[in-house]
Length: 365
Image 1 (tube, rainbow, N blue to C red):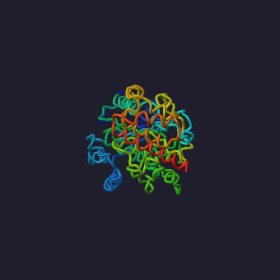
Image 2: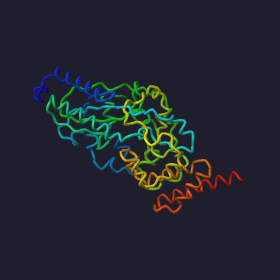
Image 3: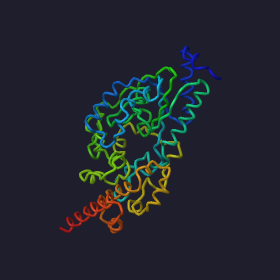
Image 4: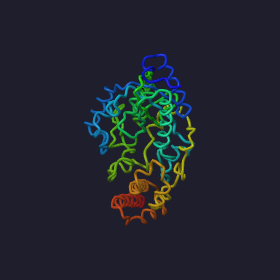
């Protein structure tokens, strides 16, 4: 049945019916929740401008280079009237996160990155949802999964999928925060959903849990201090002041989420693509550090980790090994890459070896 865009826009009943059907289709495609919002992001735009002015974005130049396209959807896709936001749980059936963090000989990888690249998974489902909508109502659309200047948390909050927590991530009473977000920009004048109420109250568990103090105030994260930024976005050397605080986190950080009481309600994902691959949920640091570049490229193909490349992967592992227990296997691994072709890796290996020498000397005294 093709309702026709012009006819549909004049019938609120048809629009409400279509919105309900879109949400049902979304659930059929594996999304846990679907909501609709308008495009007014004036408040979020002001907050973003202040955050950028303070330099909290670090080296993430893409946060400002698109100007107001990020906060004004119609500038990114002309004619956009509504944004359909979706969320999908990614929490896998994996080794206990706190147990891995508590074992400094193991590598901690953020739970979202243990499986297949979420961009591909969500984009494919969103595209199917958009195509199904167009079959019923010809319309203009564009799908996004963390791949363009889109304020996904602000839009999802307006669409009723949750509220922005003090760690700046979206929180849901039903699902915590271990989920991905995606969007469809559309010119269909769908009815909008009511925003969700805020439920953080006086809790500040996420702020206290941040290893580097990156949550500088409620709802304000200084990316330059954030372990996710330092291990993923930062292309240069990790500042020495933060290296001991990174611990064994080699790709991203979940500490603020693990501390959040609402994640008692987080559900395991039903998506097999998000299940751990190559033992990354509890692998030994030494084992990963011995991977060659070809092994990294082969094993991380199709993973979100692939985008940081072998050099930054090795940099991160060197820091974690510097924080690992003084064992022959750790010392041997660091010794094996003292002359690594990469100056960036060599510098971090040298730092790690110095950490062990200092601890050994202190123990001898």
